Image 1 (cartoon, rainbow, N blue to C red):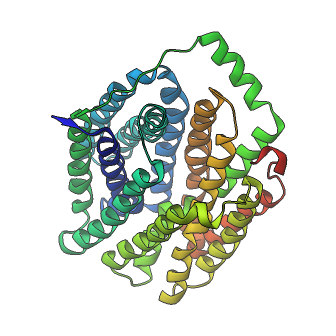
Image 2 (image 1 turned 45 degrees about the horizontal axis):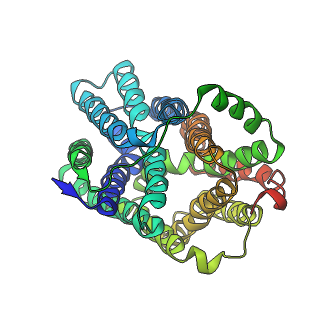
Length: 380
């Protein structure tokens, strides 16, 4: 079956982020339901994020020819589903660590490669990236809200079954043939290696990467333990799902209106706004579990995550040629994988002893980002 390329891309984003809307908010709940203690949950999720870092940094850049992107996405989707099925065969910590590492290793490169496919198609066909990417954010809202409701009715096992169903749907969607296949040529390996060294030693680049890694890494306790923390405060799984959905609704609104709101902002200014939102959000999370406070915290997700991501896209888009894809891979690997992985392991130990106090630590992680932002001249 042939599907119009824009719809193929939208379906890929939708099914990926539907699965991510299940995994990210609720996997700690599933592990907790399997009897895994918080410290071990932190280690397991941290190991998965290390694998996520490696997948984005090592697997995604290996696809150098855009004409191979669709095949690579299909293969990674199949391997991701195979690893997820492994969760059905045991709950020992060693087995879970192996499976969660494999799952994240193959699941993480799907986003940078899908973004690379979108960039390729933007040069071949008429494609509004913002309108297509919004389907991913909407899918996250639906996935997290629906899973919260299912957990309230069927218990924690509904999380695993929902994840398997969504990954199967992702694979089946990617097996459809897009109407326009991506075209491109492979790049010379020696040139890529030389560009990697030059890129990562450039002052504005490493300052940017460190800044976004801190800002995104500060989400670690939220991603891993907010659901457990809120349930322990007396909120139902359904309410927790709605709270996660509210954060992504705010994200969708900012994505949709970003050109209007931030047309004249450079990456440096956006990173400052994100850091200020982080200080406020994580301070509030450490201070209260009242519903009004939680609603405000979740609305601030559009500042802590979305504005930071917009800053990253603006900084990366200002680069030239192949640097765009390479820097996208490093950004995905460090900010969305490695930094969060380290902070997740730390958060597991801190949550065991501090509970909500762990969010004060997340607020402290944000502080250095205020001072290490890249200069405005490199942040167009």
